[in-house]
Image 1 (tube, rainbow, N blue to C red):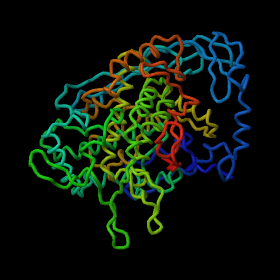
Image 2: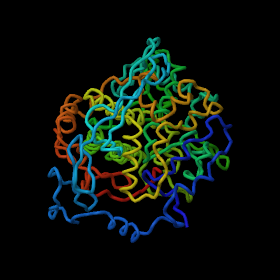
Image 3: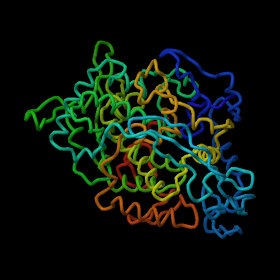
Image 4: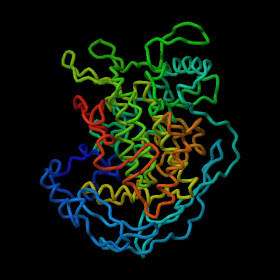
Length: 540
């Protein structure tokens, strides 16, 4: 028996498959199948049954299974209740050993600066160091910087600015409409249809078949989720810019945390009023052609749940909760559920069928066809903004730690927590290139197709390599960027302990576990506590 990898919803996917033939042909298959047996320690033809998972959890060293009975004696007196276990927590610069003891952790010396990765926006050099307790790596235990970056060449080109879609000027709306109309007609490899086909259907990455049985290229609920979607958003932005008259315009972002009466005007209807032409035109941001089936042209479908899409308080809590987390695994987990999944799941909200076909099959709800809806671009511009906000907070506070040991190491701990049986050296994936960006046959764009540019490691530095910035980091109407920075300083920087559990913020108490108004029930959450029905889509 073997573990069915396609059914893993979290981080238990085979990292070895990421180091694939980036220079291979579009239809080439290069799966390192001979090494797969070394990666999976669970033996079984299906997912482990519930009783096996319970047995796995019982094997963990839990002192009590009820929070009010947590009386374990911890070295530094701090106890965290997680997964029905009472766990000791150490102060910053200490690492937990033997379940209850804390030993000193400290940084190694800095590595040398990397070579200069050139770009039009200053280029990039990086260096890093590792947090260790004794001779063991203790990712995330040390305070201070684990990574640093600097520019290495002059800036020779202006930055694109990603603005809030609700703040666009009349001219910017006009320019985006005319550019997007032309971009969607571009049938080249740098054109709209080629790029959006990388996400899901028709399955352009057959070398991922062992993990993605339909051969799709994108990653979800996975360490590569944010880096991969950053690259496809950059790819779409660069393609769109070839038709923009104003080269400073980036892909706008949809701030779902704002209180609003409707979804953004640019996305709303099939027809849109062009304020410069002063007439109604077809809206290229509303839907897209997918394919012809049985002689019938198929386009993306929308059946939006406005109460779910406009649930700004719910989306604000999920956003703040995600950005305040220190652990990258926890950041991706929270952000993936809410706000990311909430918008996808609410944009087409129906469990009806027509002629045997699920009505939302060809919609942004489906991982296969999500990228065909132009709303995907604005949604992932907003998701990427949270990634940039987190980087900005960490760098301004002097605690940036974008390193293999921290990112991949903490993901490994998350995998262990979930009981996934992966034993490979996952740290290698941090520097492996992502497909199809690294494949120059599929992607001729030098902005993203360099080996290093398409890695999780280097793609983190968005402004130096890809030349875009966000106009602002405000979130919600009553919670500003300054409020977020103040909460971050109090709860993350000034705290004696690294804390990803409970946050007493200016918008109330946010906590990771047993929090029904933060934890997305699969489907479109309409009410914080009791969604009307459960329409589950696996973003795997």
